[in-house]
Amino acid sequence: MFAGLPELGISNGEDLKETLTNCTEPLKAIDQFQMENGILLPTLQSALPFLDLHGTPRLEFHQSVFDELREKLMERVAFIAEGKEEDRYTKLEELLEKSFPLVKMPSIQPVVMQVMKHLPKVPEKKLKQVMADKELYKVCAVEVKRQIWQDNQALFGDEVSPLLKQYIVEKEAALFSSDLSILHNFFSPSPKTRRQGEVVQKLTQMIGKNVKLYDMVLQFLRTLFLRTRNVHYCTLRAELLMSLHDLDISEICSVDPCHKFTWCLDACIREKFVDAKRARELQGFLDGVKKGQEQVLGDLSMILCDPFASNTLVLSTVRNLQELLSQDALPRDSPDLLLLLRMLSLGQGAWDMIDSQVFKEPRLELEVVTRFLPAMMSIVVDDYTYTVEQKLPSEEKSSGTYPTTLPETFTRYLQDNRVACEMGLYYVLHIAKQRNKNALQRLLPALVETYNDMAFGDIFLHLLTGHLTLLSDEFGTEEFCAAVFDNFLLTSFSRCAAQTFPPFPTSQTQPVNWIPHISPSPCSSAWFSCLDFSSTSSASGSSCVAFISGSLEPFSNSTWPLVTSLFVH
Image (cartoon, rainbow, N blue to C red; front, top):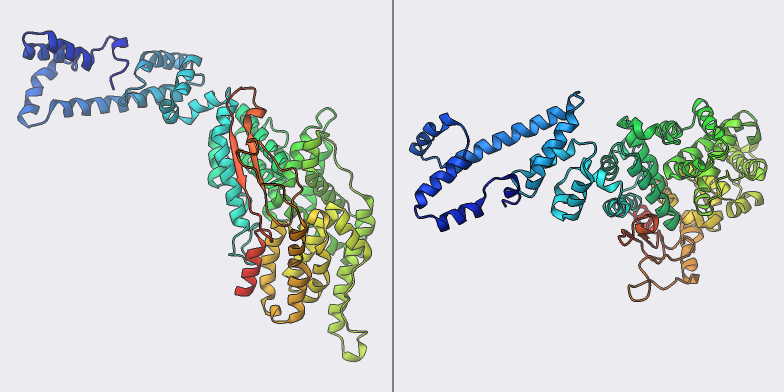
């Protein structure tokens, strides 16, 4: 409790004990100790007896004076630090040198921590002492911890890891929630609302203006994304940058080459549409990547891989195709559409780019533009034609039946091309939102076979859930139920039965950093990932492990809310 006082030449309890043990007149010894260690104010001595008359203990008086002086001192420290004197930090360093021996004394500790908090560069020796003492490390300000973390990546990883895990849990909770509707789904919150979340705010505070810590977090996110393929890490990468942007942290925003691109894309996500002006700005950023700086494409691809960015790009693509239909124009004649496809392709190639370390934009297949999109537009035309015919008098109608088959090019590209599959899935969501039962019955069976089983992904099924609630009345018909369940959802059972899972690791059978090398499955939202941060750190020995677990159910987790929501409605 009194540690450090002897170093400053101040008597403590042990000194008083020794004095009373060896003295012959204890009362005189106590009076002498009080005079030497009390408040050195001559006029106070005559006033103290009045406190005795009022029954106020001397301890209570001295404690109140001590507390008042401590508050004044802490205010003075903050005032000096905020001043403009050239020697202000020298004064604080001198005060730290005098007060640091008392850092473990609870009553003095706040003063020491206040001084360290306002020093831009705490002496290395003091930082090591704080880091070595768990109690001191726990109570020191985040400003001090930043100085410790920037040279201890493994320790910083230990602090960040629980936050990253919490972020994934929160995102998956939103995806797998059964409280779904067309007005309330995963993409409903605005970008600014999302980055007010606890995890993003904590990470922003931990990073502050420290570029080195920001770079460490980005390294963690890239590593986790590479090991897990979880696109929510891409979302966090964008949200973190924009959170720093909101606070006007120019020290970081000015050195992140993705800042302006992310800022522009964030505005598009807010509007859920990429207009012509912003499309030109985004294209300028992509075209502006200079030779020798191609690595920035890795970060740009992660930002475009963010599901919120992908959602905006594909919604804009569908809207663009509708405009082309009204103008009798072809997809290849629209520069804006080609740019949207370019960005969509770059985002979907993020994992491959980071894994291969080949930082080059993936080449978009020309036939996606010249064959797949026209095929998709023909489906839209079929739908428009049928709708118009239904409004005609019976004698002017043609066959009157809705088409049931799909162009072979359309179904083939759903299976073979990632970008085409994404657009096809969003078109299904588009027609579901329009309550187009006929088009849904025509398209859903084609989703059984899609590129990398994207139709059984959590995000698509989550959105489909909310959209299908609009068609709750249609579930009273056997034909529609067969299309949704028998011809689409229930096909995942046969897939799951045919799949062989690798053995689940245990501490006895697998090392800590075991990663199952399997492709994403429609049967589970995620397996799990174990991340050893020491593998990305120069520090030896220490490691930070993040463990994220998923389920092994016949349906992906978001299928159950789909089934329950449909029957509830």
